[in-house]
Every structure is written in C-alpha cells, then in structure tokens.
Image 1 (cartoon, one colour):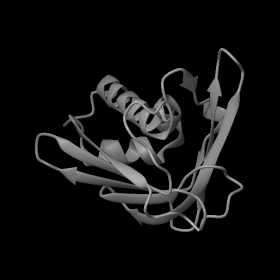
Image 2: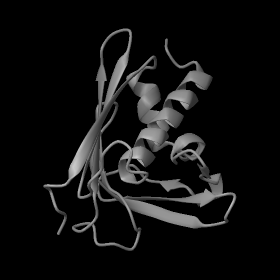
Image 3: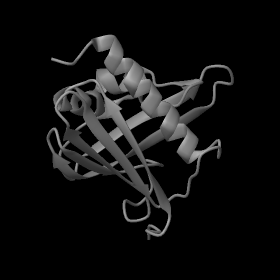
Image 4: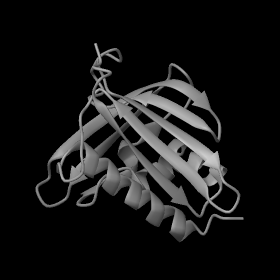
Amino acid sequence: MRDESQGFTLTREFDATPEAIWTAWTDADEAAAWWHPRGLTTPRDTVSIDARVGEHYRYTMVDETTGDSYPTGGVYVEVEPFTRLAFTWGDPAASPADAPLVTVTIADLGELTRLTFEITGVDGMSGDSDFFDGWESALDGLAEHLGQLGVRG
C-alpha cells in the first residue's frame, strides 16, 4: 500500500490559461516536450496518454549521455478537465495501490493560473537530487514549454 504519510507539494503560477496547462499534461506531443527533469528527454514515440478515469499513460525518460532509460506510467484516478488530474506514477508494472499518487490542481487566477502539484507515497525535499528536485525541474520545463507556446489569451 502507498504510504500516505510521505509526500510533498510544489506550487507554480504560469502565464497560461488553465486549458493550455491541462493540454500540456494530457496531450502526448506536449508531454514529450517537458515531462522529464533536465538532463533527460522523453522521446515522443514512447508517450501514450488516455486521460480518462481507469485508463493508462506511459512514457520513457532517457538519459542521452548514458543511454539509461526510465519507463514510467500509471493509471488515472481522477479527471476533471481544466481543474484537476490525479494519477498513479512510477513503474508501469507496479500495482496502482502501491504506486505514488500525483494530484495536479489547476486554478484560474485571472491573469495567471496556479498549478498545485502534490505527490504522496514518496518523500522529497529540496536538494534531494531525486523526486523533489526531479519534479521541480520538470515543472521548470513545463514553464518553458508554455512560454514557447505563448498560450495566454
């Protein structure tokens, strides 16, 4: 079973619409552009997303310098378009009951949109070179991706 006592939260504000942020999480082409920490890539042909409750997503992060690959995936447990997305995350072969749970909440603040990223089932803190730093880096990539799209409107 997932250890609900472990976890952390990251909050970001983006100059992007809730719809643009939602699409970045649920569209395979967009996810491939940012869904990895710095130093890794996510080849587009490894990404599949079916953002419906009970359905799966999968992607593989690749370290281009070593060739190491990190298959990742999970199951969607909550899907509320443009406001909330929850999914298990980690080893695609892991039981959903044992996998960490990610919840992404999107709140329209008018000129900005707040994204709250919560994960339970793993520990993390700034400087850990692991889960916390990896997700923080991935959210930096999301900000860059959204900025390149010029998606506020």
